[in-house]
Image (cartoon, helix red, strand yellow):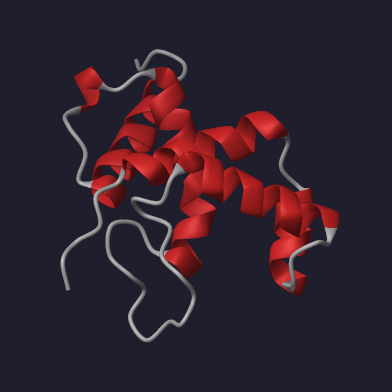
Length: 112
């Protein structure tokens, strides 16, 4: 029988490693895994360590966390153009935005 949460933890670990090419799961904290899970919805458009093929949407990998946080606050406030991003940004609280921003900041973009 599997302990409660084991499958979720394993899935989050696989997601984090697969998306970021990260270190083994034992070295990752729960906060790291949670941030990777939150960022998984961003990866569809912004990519992870490599861009989405054919997309003109900017990559976030390796950008400073403070820059990502600032832009998310601007989207949420309507101070930055972007209909879809405004709706997305308004759905996250500061803790989630900070986690996503830190996750993207630690990624090393693949060389083209």
